[in-house]
Amino acid sequence: MHVKIRADLKKNPFVSVIIPAINVDNWENVIQNLQSKKIKIEIIFLGPFKPKFKLPNNCKHILTFVKPPQCLEIGYRLSKGNFIMQFADDCKLSTKDGIYKIHKLWKKRGCSIYKLVSCKYKTPGHKTLKADYRFMPWDKTSPILPITPLVPKILLKKYGSYDKRFEAVLADLDLYMRLIRAGCNFSFANIFYLENKNINKGNILLGDFWMKDKIFLDKLWIDDVSKPLTKRKFAKKRNLIFNRFSSKNLLKKTQKPHGKWKYSGTLYNTIMHNPVFYFFKNLYNYKSFIPYLSSLLKEYNIVIILNNFLKKSNLR
Image (cartoon, rainbow, N blue to C red; front, side, top):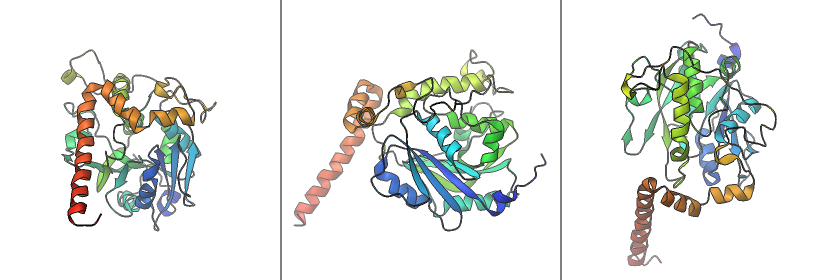
């Protein structure tokens, strides 16, 4: 595919990092991790809680109570950059100046808007294998999906951004598969997207919404969902037409399907994201309660050990 190179993407890159965000206490760490003196960056936090400190000039917070895919859409529409990078406020890049290094690798690939660069994914105790990146590991015709790639904004304008029918998660994977179907391919930099599960401990957003959004994603991209799992194939084209967000009340009201974001307001969100609420929600969803309780006990034991050590050392 012959693509005319846009000079601004090569010579004057400007990356808009879009973050649906609730972990306010970690924002300073996120900002420090992503800042660069070599490439222009803006960081856009979107969510129900205001920052507890003055944001740097290249960062802003958009107060909104809508669902995460809608936050991504708002961030994309209000972004000023010519590149988009989706991020999370419980994650970081494994290397200093990671965004600049990803852009540098993109230039080495020839600066084509169809040859993009992705991070790799890592969590403590889990080594991600190549098959883990594939949409359907058993079907080698299904795409290998990127992790927080650097995407020229022009591609979202041309092929669409986020489908409004996702409630919470996986809207980005649908976007990446549409880009792959349009001729994009992704290579992986040796830069890791590191998730710290302790930051968002107890929040079972993925558990609550994964199944419903995964069923919808499969409906879009699997040839026949009535087949046994390992007999399914990646669809030759997307099964449903892209459904974009409406501009009407985009910042103020969650568009259907609402999920838990039908109601808004600071009080509602404070309750929904309180550790006590997480505790009883995990207790109700007993399958996720055992690992959640285990993590709490491990943390408590560390506190006890540290306290005993301080006593013995006469430091308290």
